[in-house]
Length: 354
Image (cartoon, rainbow, N blue to C red; front, side, top):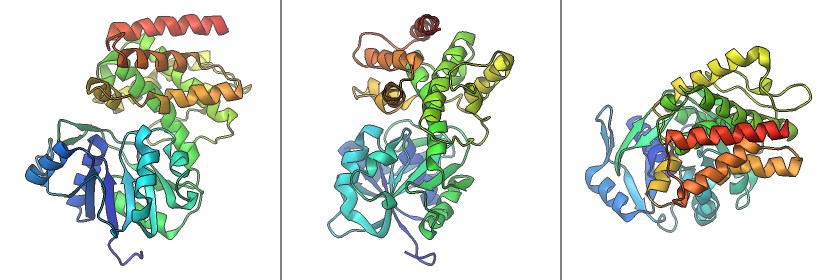
C-alpha cells in the first residue's frame, strides 16, 4: 500500500458507529465495504442503502454478510463492533489483512491489547473518536456530535501507514496522530465510564442527567477513580479536544479526590462534557433493550479489575458496574430514580473509605 493507491477499507459492524463511518467515508469517495453478521440488516442495506437521518443523504455500500470471500484482502479493517466481540472478530478476519494491513479498533475501552492477542502489535491501530453516533434502525445512522479522531499504533510507531489512515480519517473531522495511544485511550475511558454508563443507568440522554448536581458528583467520582488507576499504571494522560486535562482529579499523593478549591470548576467540566454529548443515548442501553449483554465490563469493569491488582479502591465504578448488570438481568430498570439511588450508595461507600 502506497500513498498513490486507494486503500481498501472494510468496516466491521453496521451499528451506530459503523454506519456513520461507512456513510461519511463513502461520501468522500473512499473504497469501503461494510460487513455485518445480521441477515436482516444486510437485506435492508442491500435494498434501501445507508441513509443519514439528518441530511437525508443516501449511500449504497457493498455489503458482506458473515465474512469476506476467500482471497479478499483489505488495507484497513475498521472494527466498529461491541468490545466483547473484538477478539473473535480479529481472530476470524486476520487472514483478510493485506500485506501491510492493519486492524483499527474504534470501540470504546482498551480493545487494542485484546486485538494484539491474535495479530502482532504492529498490525493494530487505535482510533479514539471524539464524536458521537446513533442508529435509528437498520440503514439509518446519525452523527450526534462534532469532533475529530486520534490515531496511534499500539506499538507506538509513527509510520507511513498511520499517516495514510490519518489522511482517510481526515474526512470525519480533525485528526491527531499520536505515539501515546494509551494516554488518549485512558482519558477517553474515564469519560466513557461516566457518560455511557450513567446514561445507561439513568435511561435518559446525558445532557438531562448531568443537570443534577448529585449525578455530576457521581460522574466526577467515577472519572477520578479512572484517573487514579491510570496514574498508578504509569500512563501519561493526554488531553482530549474540548476537554480540560483530567490529571488534576488526583492529588500529588495519587489519592482520588476532587480538590475543594476546584469544585466549581470540576462541575463546569462535567457540564461541558454533558453539553458536548448531550444527545448521547448509551449503546449499552440499546444492547440491553435488545436482550444483548452490555459492554460495561470493558469500561468500568476494566477500571475495577486493574484497580484491584494495584490496590486502588474503585467503589463508584464497582457500584456502577453492578447496577448495569442488575438492569441487564431485569432486576432494576433504567431511570433517573435508579441513578440517584446509585449516587446515595456511592456517597456512602466514599464515606466508608474516608
